[in-house]
Image (cartoon, rainbow, N blue to C red; front, side):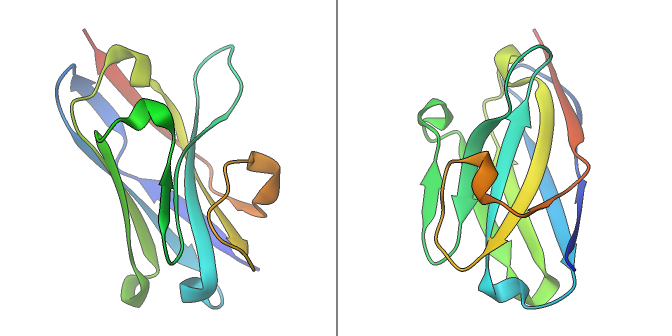
Length: 121
């Protein structure tokens, strides 16, 4: 069983930066594809970025966000720069075995509890 714990959310002004972290417990983190999703109030959970041997980003990221991982620490990061009020959401970490980065939330097996990101204008 894999458990994912996010951290790093908070309140930031528009144009600011935050770095989210997600640490995994359990087996074989290096074999996992890890993703970040977000969900704003009243909206569907949407794909943000994912990483395995390659990376994939949602179009709205537009070079503002960077996903990375440190397999020695069982941790995946999401560096978010140039934040906008519309980036306000709960951000979730997700993981899956056996496959590369995918955008569909149903493709991920493991989920964290989420961390709130609020961007003020």
